[in-house]
Length: 254
Length: 341
Image 1 (cartoon, rainbow over the protein chains, first blue to last red):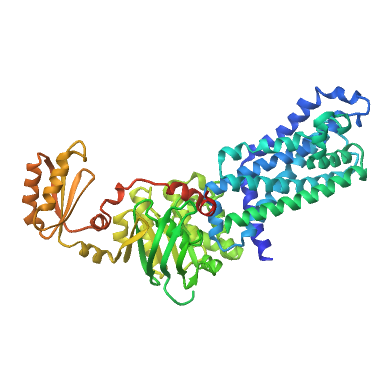
Image 2: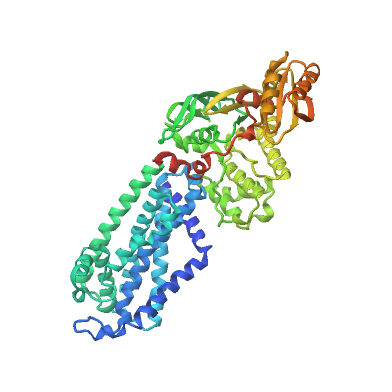
């Protein structure tokens, strides 16, 4: 229980630090709105393709906007952690008698919170431009829970990048690492309509299955055949990445 | 706290993974309630030592006990018993001063109410009550040191480790910090302080150790150390464009050959000589400079200061020594210490 108490204190501190930078939050929301605007409008005609599963392209795109925002939040988390390492604040925490894992937990939870807040904002934007969620309120809740978990997982990647490299140069550019995860997906059209090596690569990307699940909830409702693989892959990915981040963290803090 | 001295160090050594030997088998003790100064130039091993004592860095060999507890076997209990304020402090710029302190208290196990009261008390003590609800990032250098010091005191530690607490402060802020430290020590807190300022060490510390190139070169009270220099100090400031000038070498060699000269060194465009009798040696030193064709700008005879103690033991003045790779070390501390490749 002590670990939970300590993690909570560190979590609240991280939350305050985040809320103290309102422009970062505004930028995150704006970038999602721009996705709908800059991809949704010009690509609207894609829905006319034979075999395209949705009538409203914005609804199809919503899954991509949500998942991509969460994937890239891992890069933000890398920078957040690196900033604390460079300012010496991580040392300040390590000098205190708190459990090492409280510090880790307080950091991973903020990754989830940031992802959750961003997904919530995107859902509001999507609803405002007329996207209907076929999965209903429960579907929206499911998407929020799932993407929060994905935020924790991506935060782990960010954490590993920051701790391994300890370099501003690498960390600032760590979005490059997340780019293939986000774009080697059925972001713009369903996998059946993709071709060649791209289609193969998309099939190998775990994020794809999560995106497919989110999209199913939005445009079709509770189609378990599309949703379940996403859930399993999400759980497995999160478990592996949390394990890897814990290992890395233990190694770095001895 | 358990029994034993506040700090016990026996044969402590630290080699960084890259092979750099930062601390080389040093031993010393700090008694409970003592105000102890750990002196040395940048890169001498001060910061490495203090980080090992504070459990932030693992040692390579030797025995280290703080507050009667082994730092390797019982790091958590050591952390609870000590307060630490390191250089490049690791303040949380986006948090408010009061929040920063309260969180420190909570992390050391205080209840919310205790943390709130203690934070208010310490803000008063370090004179930051009026800016308590401003973000730490907006604080001046002196205010940052004071809030960091307050943070280290939140849980009432019996031993306080301070790494260069006044470096970079203006004179008034330095004196303010000194007064806080003296007051704490008077209340029974053991203080272990590193500094490169001899005046600071002289004013505050009851006992000192000087570290250079990872080894302890001297230890004792300021008075003992100064007495150990022996005799008087003659300082000659000369007019030369370049201390590497041949004439300077000639003058130095001549002075060293004079009777009654114990030691003579060149530093900062001046010559400092330790002599048994300053009045007797001065004329001979002046003529040595005349013979070398160097004009003298100023000559003084003084009793030894800690600067002279340092010069005697290390062959250079403390502020001659260049900044070293320690900056990086400070920035990354443990993260680098463990993983540097």
